[in-house]
Length: 335
Length: 233
Image (cartoon, rainbow over all chains, first blue to last red; front, side, top):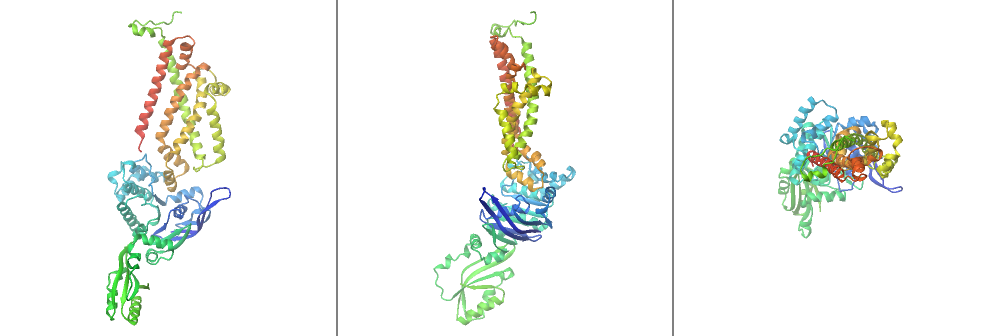
């Protein structure tokens, strides 16, 4: 749905100095998925998102959205195309002089829809984001979460095929963040709309994304399914983000521990999370095990777990256990 | 002379003003209002356009153009730095081609507009700069054209600033109209100069000043009320 090919963005900061915000970005977002880009501030993720609807025109590369090469469109055609690309912002960017209702109607008026078609559509959108009771309020009278709901309704007004989210929850408290994220998930599921979001919070990625790309210094350093990236981060930046959301993944608790047996880290995911795989496997030998550290959680809708386990038994038995666990689809790594 | 001195048969405290020819005051007030209304109308139209264009050409805006911005900026600065009394005389030929005369109430309007429009344009430019860039960005992302952004976002969001700017400009115009007596422009200021100053008529001076003061108060209060009514922040 979104195809970024060799995107470069260079800012001319002076006569001879320049700043490279994006270097050779290649990114493909599939139709109907929620794709997250995570990075520290200044990593280039915001520039990347703005390149998709050409709010920032890349200095090199091609942007394709829904089959149209945006980078080759005329201004007029680009304006038309943008009507099908919704966008929400960290600071909501609502018209302060317009009511909730007028804000949601705004993109419809820009698309030159007649008044008779605008009204029912706005009613529908108000209903969707649960703000019917607030339709005549001004943004000033709304909470942050409500403002973002207006932003979402406005972005969806013209039935976009893509929704771009620019740090959409970064200005909100944790509870409100959760409610906005569930709304985005629901919209994605119900309307099949493709969502590309950027954030600096791993919690956001974990809650809603199917796939993730990690950015650092204008480059994508790692990407893949959220579970893969989360469970086996390769880049140091990724590891930092991952450690933010799960204390249990750190090794502080076992740092000072002198194991008698062999310590292993076991990853499991999906249905296996709820099965007594480890117990059943160890029981078939004379070995025993102790759980030193563990976490069981969900990544979007996929359950996963990670355990650090000490296996106590003869070398042969422990080797066999590790092998059998691997055969059952668990990832086992020695520590 | 038979016309004139309407003796007020009132009480002693009013006798100081008893020599005033009230129909002269009335005529002058009318002239002031006439000059103000028309010069304000054209100032707002021209100044708004100029202000929008200045804003759009400025750095980081929709039509960013350093050369054109610089050029317009210089023109605006030049017009603003010429004192009104001198500007009035300087552009007399121009005034004559536009309204057919370079004197009187009619002849006062073009110089008033030429003096006030650049001033108002700067105020417009500043008001538009106050509009949150994020809202403009949101409208761009929705596929709005530049014209739509100016009409539906910039002018709308800046409306309280624009009303305040019109108020300030109107008050400035009131004081400019007082100088138009130099070219026989008429109005309250002219009356104050000719009677109050040149003929030592303190009573006329006080009345005209009081009327100008009331006019300015009304303009400012009305402006403030409108700003309050339209404010949504």
